[in-house]
Length: 165
Image (cartoon, rainbow, N blue to C red):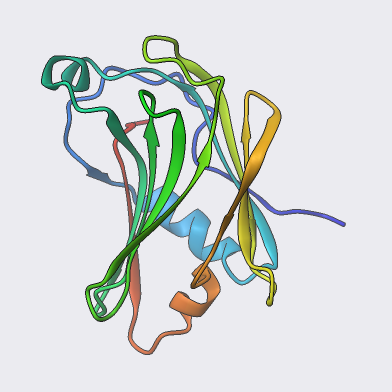
């Protein structure tokens, strides 16, 4: 089975300026893939941001998917101190929910070589499989899939990332 690959990373990550950057190319790639039953989100060489080190914040936003005209939002985070990869969601009513996978190999000061998210959108078991440095770490269930959100009336997606190309 061919799995379409959405490469959101595979970049040599630069120093992060701390602001979320809208990315038209990532938005287009995701829109091309989100009707597939499976697709991959791959990021590499994820370094600890200098700004986060100075503020003491342990959470790093890797990817944020915001749907215009609805309040829905999905955010992929990494918490190095708690050793977790987190998927945070905000639904139409404004309720926030989060699910995570524990990743024992995460270290506070060590760059992450690769983070691969295999998104399964088929019901009834829609989920995101998390691989860190090519090791399967677990699954995060999806309450709503990217495809379901794309089919929402009048929705327009915008992808933002903290990691500039």
